[in-house]
Image 1 (cartoon, rainbow, N blue to C red):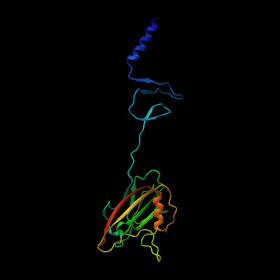
Image 2 (tube, helix red, strand yellow):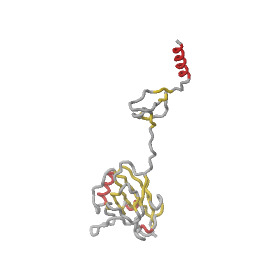
Image 3 (tube, rainbow, N blue to C red):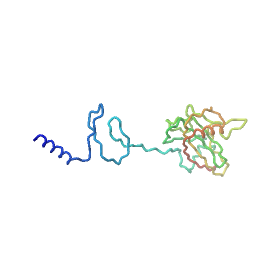
Image 4 (cartoon, helix red, strand yellow):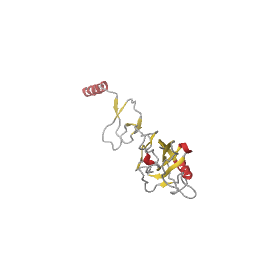
Length: 212
């Protein structure tokens, strides 16, 4: 009788000191007790090993950004033009989208009917930079707008607007979800079609050049 009274007292004491938690039966292979709150305001998924609620978390996504030696709408250095060294500027990017297989870049003069100055695909998305004047190994360069029937021009040809005029040059970097299956020297229109059909994201910067 005395033992029964003591047991009842212990049960009553535990009930009075309850903080709203309760022990759950141990899972197979579980070596520690796990408690579950009676209520939770944190959405999450169930950890099937421990039986605990794991909050859903998601790492912040970086914006897909193209970087050039000038800001968007900024002046281009003359060394990138036909009046200078005629080198393409250094190119880099951040925030490559998930699912990207390769990158491609197109440079056009928007004041001359999108005249092509450079179109290049096959860029490695895990190597997000191209040095000034460099062409990465394995890249695919198409013909530019300076090509004629008599002479094909491939790769970068810099701004060369009429004397005393100001033109805008749009650099568009594309993230592609599949490879471009064309060869270097392909027509710009063919490369543009292949790039646009495979694009999953794009980033742009426009440079301005005024011919002295």
